[in-house]
Image 1 (cartoon, rainbow, N blue to C red):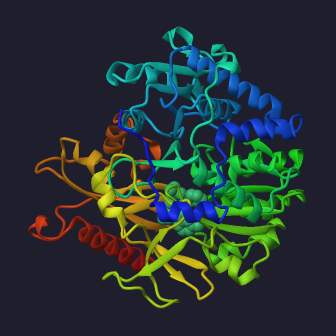
Image 2 (image 1 turned 180 degrees about the vertical axis):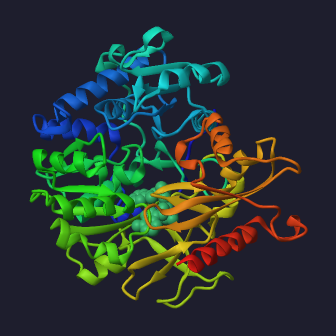
Image 3 (image 1 turned 90 degrees about the horizontal axis):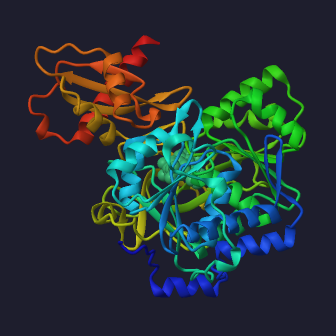
Length: 544
Ligand code: OOB
């Protein structure tokens, strides 16, 4: 197994400890300590089930010990593909308690993504629901069982039916068998990247670095044990997990309400019923909530903070949050690789609506550089690079991507930002070729690869197009092979059959005879993408 590491240069690691950012806390210790301190208080609410801190910790520890009894070992990696249900936390904290490493996948992922993540992480286990949103995850696991040799344990939250897989409810062991707490500087879990090229990369986060973000996020977002955080975005995503998210809420001893749907008709009554004080949305959902609230005038006086992040929230929309929902907007600009920026709750309204906040840590060292790598003056757009106490120094086992994304000890995020003199950042767009579709990051190259696999496709170029609802949508330009006629519906069906997450299927497919240049090879795909994107924008402008 390739070792998991996240190596911070010694001088910086020493500084982060000295300054009290890294405190030596670990996830298993955090779980025990919170169970002792907040025992009977409610940690989790899911439909009619309420779970106390003591019960959550006990369930996790028993599950972790049960995994050991099944033959899994500390250090083993286990992929969790669960939705917003209590089992997600039993699984994640159970793995922590047993010294194992969770790898977080999203419920929308399908065979292609899951196979890649299992293989790359060398996971020996997979934890799935039985069925969710009409999709049978057991069938997916059964296919993977045959093709991923390292996969030895499939655990089903719910009914394993005839698969022969283990039922999560039956995995049970004696917490006395759990190992000692891990080294706080060791890797706690693998998060996945949005990715601008190819499939997701694995992001190793350590106990020390991640728990620092939880502690600071809980403070910046004003969490107390009386706060109630509603999770409607997938709990496996870094935003919902740690900014402050569910883990930040646990850090503070607060209550997490698991929402089963982000639509206003479901969320508003849940906010009212549970007295939710803070929740997190991506911009398209925030727009949906704003429009619904104008119509429905919901009684949600407990809601103090609405966080919006994952993609750019335009200032005109941001301005509506306070008057329409009656709560404070907090913009969150973060990345699973580390750096998270927040507008602060007491910032002036202009800062809240026009910026994406400033970093968590005084030791987040932000650079804004021009194309040649020279720092630009404040107020001028440039490439964002960063290093700091919770930003990774490399992806797991990705020499090529690491050479592209890390330079002089800094991570290049691919974002174009403007920095104000006081350190607040405004995101201008992306330098790279990824599409941010309602907060889901999609690599243009990956979608092109799927299209090119179709026998009738000669070439394909995928671009992002600004979209009023989604923020950006996926537009594919496809040149069919000579003599072939293709239909969009046929290509979409073909892509679905390749078992990829549905959010990667192009929203729009345009057929072209060629790409307007004789030798495609002579210009980079990146140039081609920006040229085609400009053509669509010109078309759209002409139609208005
Ligand atoms: C969050 O994490 P990822 O890893 O899915 O995506 C990171 C990328 C950023 O590099 C940026 O391109 C984009 O998502 N992004 C934003 C944004 N927040 C994220 N772009 C504009 N405005 C924003 N507010 O998306 C994530 C992780 C932790 C907290 C929040 C979001």
